Amino acid sequence: MTTGITSGGSDSASAPAGADVRPGGCLCGAVRYRIALPPKWVAHCHCSMCRRAQGAGFVTWVGVPEGAFMLESGADVLSHYKSSPAAVRSFCSRCGTPLFFQSTRWPGEMHVTLATLDSADGLEPQAHSYWSVHAEWADWRGRELPRVEPDE
Ligand SMILES: [Zn+2]
Ligand SMILES: [Zn+2]
Image (cartoon, rainbow, N blue to C red; front, side, top):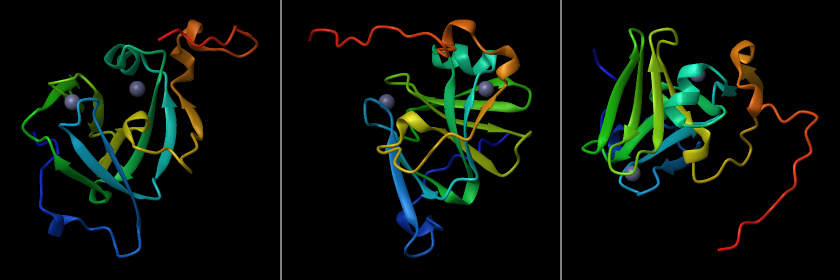
């Protein structure tokens, strides 16, 4: 199957002139990409596979049409894991950053992790997806925890 992730030159970007193009990338900087805004949706996903794949309580995804996604660099270090018959998760094999998700359940969409965008300005999550299976410890409603700044 194809992941839909291809590297291309600048001439393959399909964002119209004047579009709000938002860059992003992995921790080590090998993988760089950009998406054209606005997204189709922004949502926290609490499903067990996302939680385990990210090593986190939940993951916030930004869904864009495939045509609004452009891989700028790092195709050679991007690894793809088929987490279910329908879904492929892509991450940087050098630094481990989870980056992309595609599934036949959402054909024509590319999902990118909000946290890997250089700026989340204007991208407000609209929903908690798979809340029915959320991690209890990741639900901070009604819990006031001390806010600390670990010493460097
Ligand atoms: Zn990396
Ligand atoms: Zn999920």
